[in-house]
Every structure is written in structure tokens, then in C-alpha cells.
Length: 545
Image (cartoon, rainbow, N blue to C red):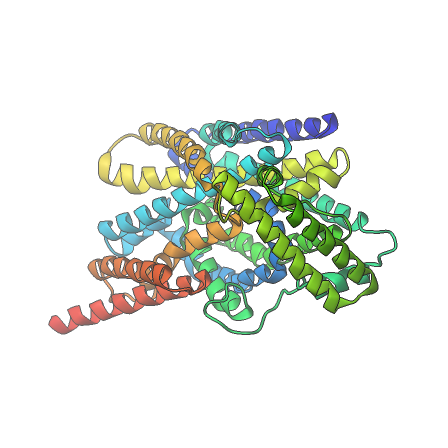
């Protein structure tokens, strides 16, 4: 990066941290620290919800996902609008009128303490693992542009996040999310504009779209059905809806966003805004990745986008032969693109992919990173090599802003559940409010440190955007199932709900480990098993009585 880029990046990061600490002043009670005193307007909650989900993974990995696999990933969000409408209509008024700090506190009011504790621990486990994955994305950034050790990168991000999250709580988190979302949108627009402008001057935009389509990158709707296919219309509408119901309706990192709302109307508006805006935003990001693919049809990309693996490949015996095959395939693909000979184009693409796979295998043997993919490096290589001065810093700031928004929200929600559902409920139930406020600050710092440590281990997970959603899908279905029982089946009591959650998790992990079922369907499976088990146990209890 050049000096102007550094100025943009440093000023953006410092400004976000300072703004967060300024907006978080006055959070001097537990209610203000964890729920902003229920004072947030709908637009702040809406942008905070979107920013929390639009992590650095969204920028880094989703664009790379589109480059490698096309836009079919957008189908994962097809069920989201339906989920948002259902949550706004059903969950929001129940949570608001119960006066809870966490979603799991509601479960004790409906069931019992052990069910609340079990689901709270499941959240801490799942979100505690995911926060490291979210924070690992910026480590990829500076590994590419500076070669900094990932440990130092994650430590820097952790310090920035903890600085305003510990001091200002949810109010600081929400208002910095608003600022971060603005930076993210500006970065996205800059990235797509640059990708399009860098295409050959004699290439009409309609031809670029035809090329992307011929390469299978413009595939936002796949109608064929298979339980083993990760992304198609059916898994997106059904499995994606269940994932969104669980994420936005049961995951404290999202529930806490709208629990800060002034009233039910403001809370509902924040969710409905996301119902309308989320799919277009995701489409925009994936389309950017598709245009980056078209750009690299005419500008030769490295055989491996990961600089470390690319350097290791070049040192291997026989690398020249693989590189020659790669060069020939690239030239053949470019020539076929210019003549719109799509049959030859696809054949050359297959040769190019085979050469890349051979290079990755050789590099993996040399570095011990067998099977490591370069998906997370594709967009970053494009940004740092080809975007104009100043714009690089803006996009880097957008990536860091996304990482900070997600990490701060997750750290804040983890601290909230730790204090309200564990510490206050089971350790110190009768302390003064200032004691819980202090505990909230300390536990926020603890989870920030935890995120930094676990981020180091998330580097080898391939596509980070897939990794974080697969991880959530191991737990979300069971969480959703117990809330459905709580909302709609009054005859189900605490012991039945508790046992149902355990059975649901056991079945989900068994299917995940023993089959190739796509992860989106695990959300449906977990919910169905918990509901079925809970209702069966309730009927059995009724029959005994």
C-alpha cells in the first residue's frame, strides 16, 4: 500500500474506535451497558444487525467464493425475508414484553433454569468458536499486503475492538456499526466500480456478462434438488429460512441488537429493513467476485493467490512444467473469450483449474498445508495490485470495519450471556447493579482476548464464509426447535424441552459426521428433531398422569 492508502486506513480505524468510545459514554448501569437503556432507533439497530452479519468474511471470502464457484451462494439467503417477517411478528413482542436481557432468559420464564443454562452454554460454545473465525479475516489481509504475522494482526484488531466495547457496551457497538456500515458500502461500490473499469476497453459490458455466464459464475438460481448440494433454490428457501430464523431469532449476537429498541415497532422495522436489503447486498458482493473473475480472464492471475503457497510452489522441482501448462491454458482461455468460443473457453478453464490444483498440491506438500485453498486471498490480491491509490486504503478500511463490527457484537453478546445467564443466575444472584456492570466489562475483555487466541487457529479453514455458517448450523437447529416449543406448545415443560435439545444435538452431529448432507439442511433437521422429541415426551408424560 502507498502512503495515501495508509492515511485512509489509519484514520478510519482510529476514528471508529474514538467514535465508539464517545457514543458509549454514560453507560453506567447494567441496563445501559447491555441494552442501551432500550433507547435505540430502528435505523441504528437495522444497520447494526446488517453490519454484525456482514463481517470481513463477507468481503474477503464471499467475493472469492463467487470467483471460484459463481453466485449460487446467494441462494442461502432466499429464505431470509420470510424468517425476518416471522421473527418480527412472533419473537419480537414476546422478548420485548418479557423484559429479558437475553433470549435464553426467556427460556427460564417459559421452561426452567436447566433449559436456559443448556441453551445458553450451546450459544457460548457455538458463538465462542465463531468469533475466532470472524476475527481471523483481517489476519489474512495483512498477511497479503505486509507479510505481518497473523498473531500481531489479530492482537491489533482485538485491542481496537475491546477498547470501545469494554468502555461503552452495546451503545458503543451499535453506533460504531452504523459508521462501519457506511464505510463498508463505500468500499463495496469502489471495488465493483474498479473491477468493471479495469476490464479491456474494447470489451462491452454485455460481453463481460456473457463471459461470466459461460464460465458458470452468473448462477444465482440452481433449481436441481439434492440434499448433498450446498446451494440450490430448495436448500436456500427452506434450509436458509431455518438458518435465518435461528440466527436472528435465537442467537444473542443478533437478538441483543433489537432488544435495545425503544418499542416493538422500532424493533420490527429494524428486522424488516434487513429482510428487504440483505439479498441485494449479498448479490452485489457476489457480482463483484464474478467481475473480478472476468478481469482475470484478460489479466493473468498467479497460479496460487496465497503468496506463501505460490512462493513454495515456485521452489519445487517440476514447477516450471506446471507453470507452462498453466500459461498455455490461460492464453487459450483468453483467446477463446475474445472469439466467444465458449466450448473452447470451458475446456481451457478446466485445464487452468487442473494446473492450479497441481500447483496447490505441490505447495501443500512443501509447506505441510495439504488441501489449503486460496479462496480467501483472491479478492485481496486484486485490491492490493490493481486498485488506485487511496481506494486501496478505503477497501482495507471497509474490511477492517466489517471485522470490528462483527467481533465487537459477538464479544458483547458473549459477555452478556456470561453475566446474565451464568454469573448472575448461578454464581452471584443478589449483587448490586454496579457489581454486574463491572463483571460485564471484565467478561467483555475476557471474550476479546479469547477471540484473538482462537482466531489464530481459524486460518486453515478454507472458505471462511462457509466455515462460519457450517459451524452455526451444527447448533442453530436445536436452538430454534426449543424456542418453537416455547412459543407454540404450552404443554411441553422444562424436562421435556431439556431432553429434546440434547437429542437434537446428538442427531445433528451424527448426521454431520456420517453423511454428506448439505449444512443448510442440518438447521431443518435439528429443529424437527427437537420439536418431535419434545412433543413426544410431553405426550408420554400426559399419558402417565
